[in-house]
Image (cartoon, rainbow, N blue to C red; front, side, top):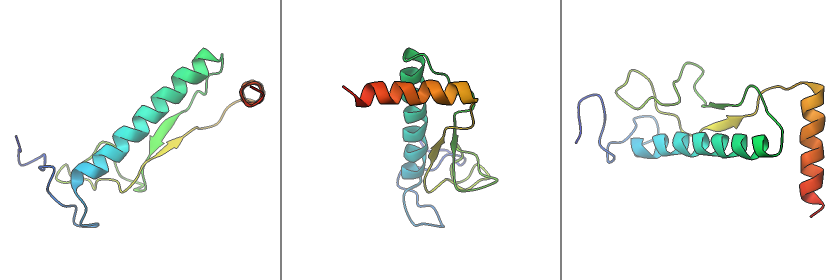
Length: 101
């Protein structure tokens, strides 16, 4: 059901002419990728403290859709953030171990 604040999946974003649902699916995809990476890293004994999802709008909300007062993102990126030197070394070791298989 469509409400005034939530467009139907066939509504188009004014900036791209693409369906608004496609924008939110990109954010969902990035959130799922972030979560899957966090689980895999945790299982390998590595924790990145600042993983996040970023969109191209500086003032945008990754979960905003057209009509929410924000523009829906055209794409979303998994931001891995910063980590300490020991965590970076752990991550490098896990990657090397996996690459050696």
